Length: 454
Image 1 (cartoon, one colour):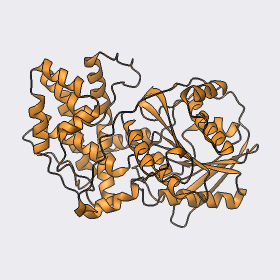
Image 2 (cartoon, rainbow, N blue to C red):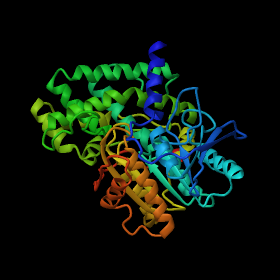
Image 3 (tube, rainbow, N blue to C red):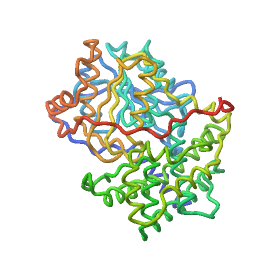
Image 4 (tube, rainbow, N blue to C red):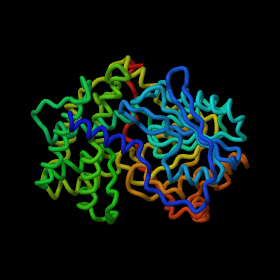
């Protein structure tokens, strides 16, 4: 139980911790704190600076699986200080409960906005801003909140939605079970409780560690991490060179073993919310999954070096993929699926090497927005960092200013181009920024649902 508490504490830190951001050089104006409780029990807070510029940022926080469920109204103290100093008001809720709360989080945000404006007056502009899980909630607000919001900024968001997120994570977990724990009974879905999920995660991490002892094991880990869409760059370490396959695979392994307990425990919580397992891998072609991952050449090369048969492993994964979804859980989880039909301009921001919420989510989101004929409203920006939501203060404030400029002018006109956002960030006096032009790999979680699930 003590181990579980430590892991839950780690999850909370990953989800909600203040980012290590650069200090602001603008003196923060005194702010007035407001707070309240919504009819469904969600609490909210708002900070309004004395020099309020008329823009209110409605913040949606990251995933929090712990019983402690405080309201949050900014990405962290440094970002809050910088934004308040520039006159932005900040508001945010706790959501109605902790955990996977996609059924109420967006409405909790809009109810918070209404409660705050009843006290402080109507803002000149209201912009949704969200982090990680809250980035997905911001995506919901961008589709539903056109009467109350003028724009939306989704940072490091789960923009592929909950079903697709847990589908590709199931693919990776299936590969661990079949390739590294062959012959053992490994429960991957329908966990009875969090303790059972952590037990599975512990076995999987131990198997990953043991696999590092042999070339064949490292080759299979390369395949597994490709299916999990893990990046090669580890936070706090040098970025692997483009041709250094061994360093790349080692980085993917380190990233995966760090976040695997979070992924598996998160599935347990998600299944409780959905009332069952909303995901499936029956019918998945794992050869195709690897080909679409963009890592086929590297995985094939390391398999050849190890002297083992990649095709045989891919056939094994395809043949043993038998997990089916619970239709009612699938239908409930569709509340987290973003349609791409936008009510307002949206700017997404993602780090290039995010191990927890891979940047590939942005590829799927852009595709959904395009298919919904809303592409003119969307722009996507990328910061060259390793890690989840590891943005600098300058990058976050630049994103807010960029969106405000878009709302003012009614046009993008290149505002979200990397060089424009970099110049803006550099001019803020908030430290470094690393906006780059980036081509996002294919997202692996999107698959058509069998008719019986719908």
